[in-house]
Image 1 (tube, rainbow, N blue to C red):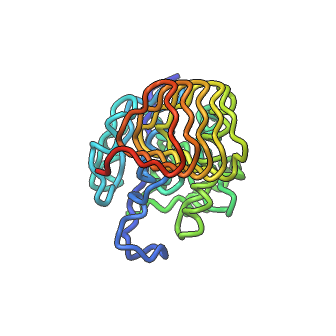
Image 2: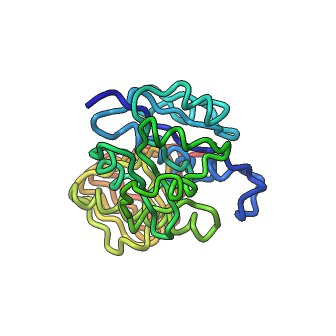
Image 3: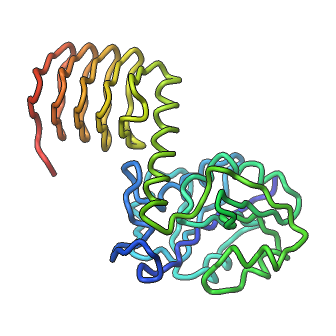
Length: 274
């Protein structure tokens, strides 16, 4: 396959969004990462990998947010700058659409221009050659306009993907990402007694045969060993928890380590906040 470039659109101003926030949509936290990290990581993780991923606009975004994303990630001031730095065909993704990952790979298989429509009917991604890129000329990078500009382009649909515009959408994205992360951990041998009643961040690692009780919050770069029991209502933030550990419940652990086979009684607090 010829070289291609990923472009993430992060062009919306905070005041233009109905989130009611002074914080840019792209910076709102989602599973332990800024929302924009998810579409950038999705593009960079595709196979074959892009020559680079360009983030167009990027209000208040800084390169450090994407330091662990594979390959080259570059921030540009505008869509025009991003397209000028692009190489080959371009896969454009809305920077507020964090759930499109499974549907992006089929776009790369299209020989011509192709669009990806989310669950709400909004276009969230586009696979474009020279003809399609010539029609992506609006400064806002509004992908919805491509439906009329490219009437013959095939439209793929993803029932999970959508662009976050509201607090309700942010909560819906958080729930879906949580379900995906929990499913991946369960496939690796972790038991969640009530999967829908936990919160898990992207960077959490859990060993096999560990049991997680309901109402737990596992945050940050947390690692939990094998055959450990995380009792109900525990909050664990950026910790190393050994194997064979038992947390009896209602424990708050932050930036600390718990040795192998340790037992913590209910309501014990360990560590410190940063």
